[in-house]
Image (cartoon, rainbow, N blue to C red; front, side, top):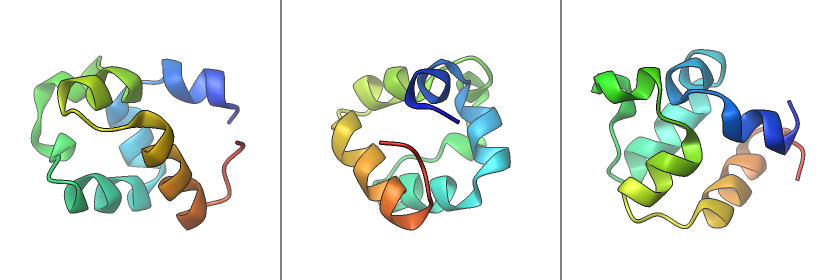
Length: 69
């Protein structure tokens, strides 16, 4: 999935397709798997809401999985 598509995809979909993302977010204190907003919130929106650096988060996730830069 390219970066643009990734950033348009609801967090809930990303979590179901990428279990490593749930672990990463939980390590940052974000528990999207338990939140109803994850149905429609994007990763970018979640990062703003939880005061996370989106680029740093994507870089860390890319280290855990093979994702496009």
